[in-house]
Length: 98
Image 1 (cartoon, one colour):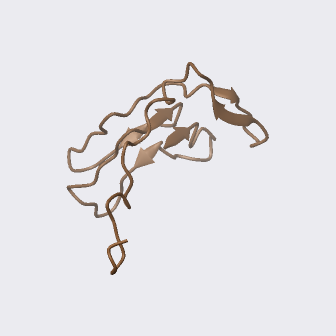
Image 2 (cartoon, helix red, strand yellow):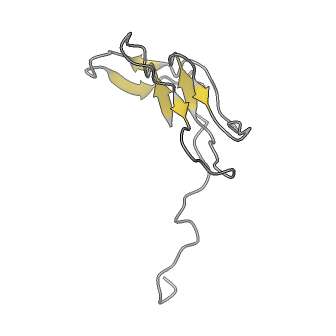
Image 3 (cartoon, helix red, strand yellow):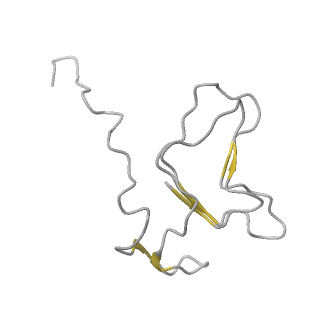
C-alpha cells in the first residue's frame, strides 16, 4: 500500500494509517509506504509498529493532487521492491483440492 498526502487539508486530521476504537493486538501493517501524511504517517494502538514499511517519497512519475497524474512508480522508487511476497489465497484450494 502507498498512503501519500492523506489529511494534508487544513480541515482534515487524517493520519496515513490510523487505528482507533477497539483494535486487535495482532493487527499487522507490512510493506507499506507512507509519506507526507498529516498530522503523522502512523497512529497505531496496542504498542504495534509497522514491519518492512517506509516513510519515504514513493516517487510517482507525475503526482497531481487532483488525480490526473501518472501514478506509476519511477525505477528509483523505494516502493518498487517493497510489495508483499505472499497472497492471502496462496495455497488455498476449493473443496475438490484445486
